[in-house]
Amino acid sequence: RQTPLLHSDQGWQYHMPAYRRQLAEHGLTQSMSRKGNCLDNACMESFFGILKSEFFYLNKFDSVELLDAGLRKYIHYYNHERIKTKLKGLSPVQYRTQCSVG
Image (cartoon, rainbow, N blue to C red):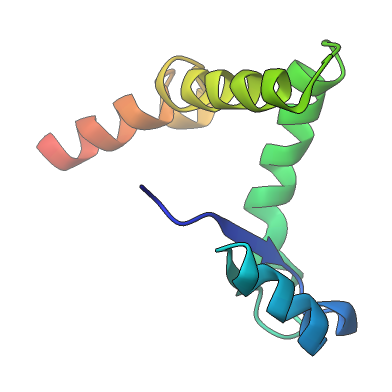
């Protein structure tokens, strides 16, 4: 089982001992962008924007379990089936596989 990773910028609230303690108690690994470098967050911000527009805003969730199941299904779709023009019309997994073979 993989450990969940929570990525954020270096805002003061993310440095608070109580916040960090809560992460540890829930088995989350904390990740922060480098100080003063918003580009570290660009990939995740882009993904979250796509996730919200293609999945979250288009669905209604009657329980946390349904949201969780839907997120897992969408992330699998995003990585294995959703093509990107920046990746030569391949999904991220197809692109990485092609690059590692060739």
